[in-house]
Length: 144
Image (cartoon, rainbow, N blue to C red; front, side, top):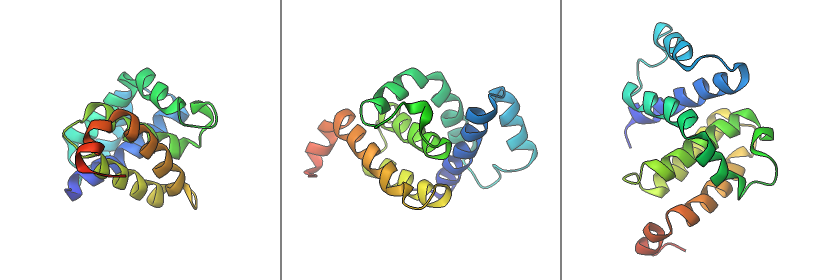
């Protein structure tokens, strides 16, 4: 997994967090990230895909999440919510990306940005979504 793609995910978490909290216009947030050079070590095209893809597919993403979380999606910690939404986006719409990569990236994002122990929560939820959305891939790999 490329570091530039990992950095794109990190920037997307921060940008989605900002969008969730302030409700700002997406293109305004993207412009800020570009101006502040917060994307200079990131794969910009992947940042754009995640940052616009999550809000565009929010209903489907939150529906997938709501089956496995113990509270309304809107009440999940905003950092964890952004990380989970990116992970679910990747599980649903980036089928060429192995589910284990999606889980590992989500865990690492939670370790970087989340509260203590939030990586366990993120892992548990993404794993359950993967079991449902990527069952064929998981079975083919002989996992579990």
